[in-house]
Length: 66
Image (cartoon, rainbow, N blue to C red; front, top):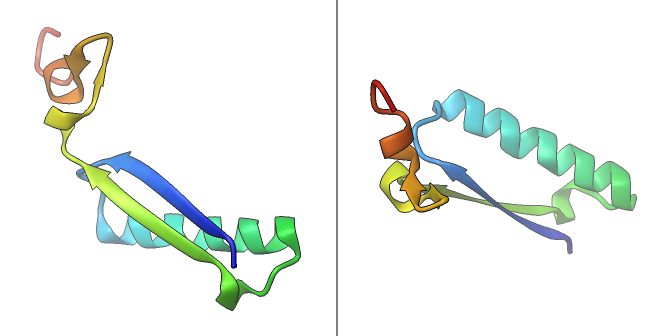
């Protein structure tokens, strides 16, 4: 049973997340020639204040003038 874990910044719509889950499931099933029902995809949303690059959070980067 293939398992994929995806981390994304919080804030996307439920429709967008649902499409991501479906598309990743299909891609894994095709790539591994595995039944779709055997594919597990875990989606974890990370608050923008908990995601940083170069010591600067996404929340800080998205502030006007940043």
